[in-house]
Image (cartoon, rainbow, N blue to C red; front, side):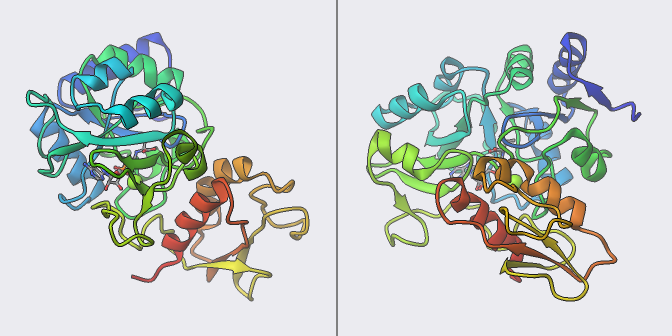
Length: 315
Ligand code: TXA
Ligand code: MG
């Protein structure tokens, strides 16, 4: 076993928090995907995150907190934020809010914006780790920029093992898609990224959201490039069968028995949890591409299809 990969327990969590507070990068599990954590108050540590991922500096990072009270010291809450945080934190929801005047988070982490994306993850290891760190933790998904997000500790080891001091292994991520990002900093809340919590669940709490790409008034998130989440071989979506040389990624009971299946029973939660790991598994140099069967565009299927479209995008 690698000496940087550690099963998460009291000792390894404490050691990981010490390494982070000394300026090092530490990967840790959340319910969505694994994060590449850095002390968000340190310009040097945050710069190291951008360098490790090869991430453009204009794409701001999500800042993680052990609980909502800690988040309130970094951003200014309003009624919409209060409602969403009460109902959905801890959970797969990121809120974009104005920075407080004395916000301790590095300006580099928010790419110089006067807003900050904040989240309280719903994972026992993330919770204990964030508590032990004591300060806000900047954590993008722990993958090279533009590639598939990691849903196991081994995924992190494969692609960013060189960059991190430690990887806390908390098993596979239960949700498997990144958090939903909602900008509640202005008058009209806007959906910036679909994710682990559905648009319907959010709209049930605070009413209709502006949606980038649908509403001209909706702001766009700096990081939502069209090509993203991409394996090294092409992806083809809404496939019925595989062409010669392609690997088929099935969905539902009618898919061929021999192909890997995101969810044989057609369960979208199960499909989301399997998505990134199965794409990685099929991303083999011997194959000409991955053909993914049609996923219904409802509930979590909307976020799954968003990721697949970006993975399939050529630009
Ligand atoms: O599930 C997740 O959200 C994972 C886990 C580790 O928490 N993190 C994650 O981070 O996906 P990242 O850095 O890969 O995605 C951050 C997204 C980007 O689309 C970025 O543009 C947006 O959040 N974002 C961050 N700060 C923002 C801000 N101030 N305003 C608008 N969008 C922001
Ligand atoms: Mg990412």
